[in-house]
Length: 514
Image (tube, rainbow, N blue to C red; front, side, top):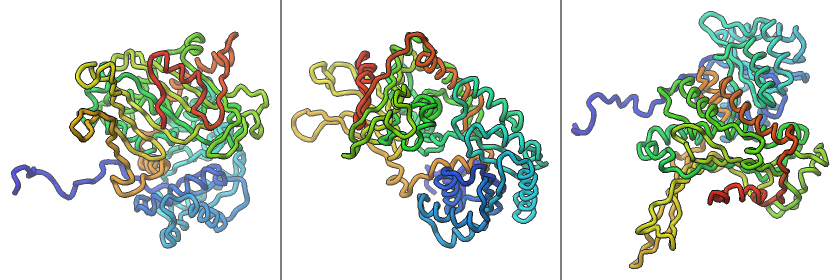
């Protein structure tokens, strides 16, 4: 035997996952005739089945107002899954999968419909062995939450049977400000305990977002450098070439700050900035994320004017196609002051990040789409190969969240030849090429975790409310102060307003081009 081989190693365990396994259950989707169900949820559950990870005893019940039969519901879902599944559809797998799909027609406000749902779920438990485990998915507008939850309670569907569990998944937007989020949390927690409440943020289901902690805490070369001594600043960017499309009324009430920054981008920031958790348990990880949110320096109206830029796209061109300005979009106020772009400088007031600015930006109608985290390290000393007359540029670690999931590291290298010529090069890691298969869709991981009772990638109540508390200071400065900061404008197809460039230029920084 090779002397370097451990005698205690078990080759049968090599490569096995330590994650909890999904359990048999009935998944009830409220709003089953909606776009999210057809484009994301059912294709995700099908892909889990195709990968062999779905419990054998699992039923999916669609709850919606429209008249449909089980057969017509299955036909519609097959068409959608063939269109939106990342792995296509295998006819044999679909035939077996379709037998798990059922449709329950009821108005959301009809108490009798919930009683019949309870009877149907009991019958499925007997026929399919789902053990009384229930996972309710609220794929509906937040205005419907309270009514649905109260009816579930009245029908006894929120009660957990002995040896089983009952959970609820809530889609964003989770409130529109801190008071509404607190009220919504109170409504949900009257019916479901916090441990059974799963607030979904699909960004946390993306493979690269999950890999942030592994990158930091499983690699000794990064964590010792992950602090104010070595990091100059961090940029978190989410850009989209699309406009608001048909979402004018929603976007008018939300804007870029509420739609993206409050949830997705602050989640990425907290993963990037958090301290090492004591273990990989859900609450240990979320405790550290909450500490980051609580450490965000609140902004006064003067701070907002100095450190936050809000913009709105005007007419321009994307990919050679002329596009109209935001105020001309369908069902948008012609005098709208809603931001489609936001850039802000954030400070985290703790020991690790003292003096390190975090720059966050999100914009629509930008030249390309993508989401990334760029960690820029401090420059090497101005001697030897980094003289002031010939600066070489800093090392940059880029974590690409989407669409090309992976990690790259920029460093300096000597070009071949007799002369000492230094050029930046990139070390690139791509999920697709390195592992030979596409990453699972975010909803696949999140649905599996909810079935397994793992809440790590779901937002906790104090996390959501802490993020709203930070964002509300900015929203108040924009909409309730006597002298609100002006709205900047940028042409579609550009990288945003010049004011956003000036925000970084004040400290000698510049936005990365994706």
